[in-house]
Image (cartoon, rainbow, N blue to C red; front, top):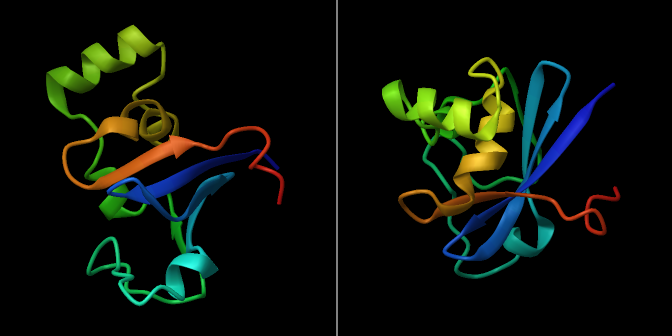
Length: 113
């Protein structure tokens, strides 16, 4: 079973993790985020809850963060990531997305679960 993990941040604050397990993605809000008084969901389609959200493929919210069209072509060639690897593209390109949500690959020391 192959697993890739990214940390999801909003305005620089860690809010959860996104994991790819084979052809499924799982987004889970962190317990620390859920206990914060000012906690807000990252999307209306992903309301706050402790249970993970699982989706076959990439959840549409995260898919909408990806480059499209010619920018996807350029990103794919430059980063040497297949256009058929949306999770890889998410980890590679969404560390500095437009908007408040960022996805960064987990550092090796924090990826232990």
